[in-house]
Length: 213
Ligand code: DX5
Ligand code: ZN
Image (cartoon, rainbow, N blue to C red):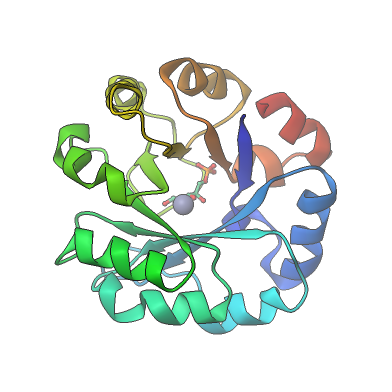
């Protein structure tokens, strides 16, 4: 099943709760919340207080993408703030296995993300601790960038490894996803699609979500 996770980075952030309500009614399975610290990535967005405030207005699954250094320091607080899925970056974590275990032990789904220059094979040994893996299809930091087709073999390699080992791990993709690139990533084995610009910049969000599916 394909799941759509619109990234609120591209929405009207002054009306965050309303915008999330719109995509929820339009059939999105989750809301993708990008947390940036100005250190792991050259941009800043929002943190736990915003997520906690939004939680009071929405029941949708919060798919929290941590683009921060020292994710082990903050993961638990994001779960307390209302994250349902916590994704951290392999490149940022000191001990990815321990952090995946910690996230699960606190009742959230655990996911690990890799930047474009990190190979799929580097996280193979972590797959049995993951509910989801996130393959970045742009350099993390900004919405509105172009999809990197070079990432397709990486998605394929992960899907093959997950199938070979009989695991139940979602593969999420993030960056430059629109109806054309959605087709490519789905063929390669992705089943969770993050989309910022292609959903929130569209006049009709429901049509945009349906087009991705
Ligand atoms: C980029 C973020 C993305 C971003 C995607 O670093 O992780 O989630 O919002 O935006 P689009 O879909 O516009 O590429
Ligand atoms: Zn993201």
